[in-house]
Amino acid sequence: MKTVITAGNDAPHRFGTIAIVGRPNVGKSTLLNALVGQKLSITSDKAQTTRHRLLGVRTAGAVQYAFVDTPGFQLRHTRALNRALNRTVTGALGEVDVVLWVVEAGQLGSDDARVGALIPAGKPTILVANKLDRVARREQLLPWLQNLGANHPLLAEIVPLSARRQGDATRLLDILAPYIPESDWAFDPDALTDRSERFLAAEILREKLFRLTGDELPYTSAVLIERFEQEGALRRVAAAIVVERDGHKAMVIGAGGERLKRISTEARVEMQRLFDAPVFLEVWVKTRSGWADDQSAVRAFGYED
Ligand SMILES: Nc1nc2c(ncn2[C@@H]2O[C@H](COP(=O)(O)OP(=O)(O)OP(=O)(O)O)[C@@H](O)[C@H]2O)c(=O)[nH]1
Ligand SMILES: [Mg+2]
Image (cartoon, rainbow, N blue to C red; front, side, top):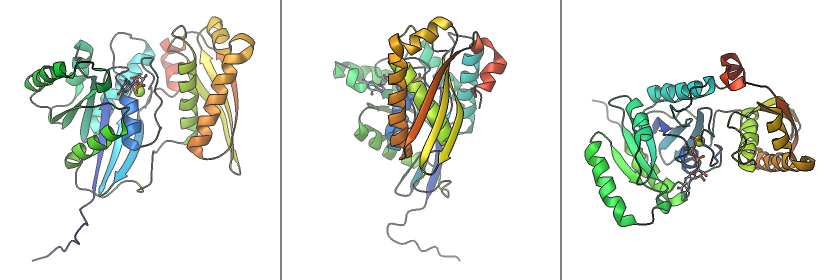
């Protein structure tokens, strides 16, 4: 008989992938950042901010979690861009060990239910009722939670929280741990993501674009990194913001170029923080009409994983 001797605190390693899914704007990317403990995924109050699956790795104790942030799933718009985003969600759901299905606390509408229906049967699923800080009357949440449990008996857990609170994310890590399979780790303990700096640079610039322009700028604006070079520690980045109309171009540039300047400065500062290195960033604005309806353009912009 073989005897395995394990030292006191030498728990077996666990590794698993966890998809974060939900309708647009429920706080999936904010939650990923809190779970990973680092701002990695871009967030904004505009729907469909996230356009790519993004892996965020967190190693805590014996457990390594690989979180997969996904675009908000929606069926309201049917452009080529939206169809590509939805395919990213269904693709991720098929591959992971566990699902975090994010909704807003106190709300579970038909758009949320459609996301729930995509989750493959038998996949351990935790419902996260996010934005708990926005619920004014906590006592009204209890019957909502009880009702939810009764209507969705297959949910492994229901966790009300606020993704903006770091302590809540830490608690969620503990809740998740038993659902993560025993396995060797797939990443270095200090790994954060499998994405390149070039990819992250494009995302950071798109976040500033989304945050610093009003609702008048359609969500179909995109960012392309045309050059990303390293000279010693310095990163030299040339990027293009692609919009659908000349009017949108003027909007991004702003009076006297002020808005574009602010977008570029904020993006550069955040890139420097994430890369821990100096960044030289040049940004242009270009018009390309109708790209979001054009399957090949959507693919060329990388919106298909
Ligand atoms: N009050 C409050 N706001 C939150 C919370 N979590 C996220 N938000 C805000 O909700 C908005 C959307 O957050 P995101 O993390 O970008 O949402 P998302 O689900 O990733 O959105 P898409 O990528 O567009 O599908 C942002 O303005 C966040 O700051 C929370 O716990 N409380
Ligand atoms: Mg997102």
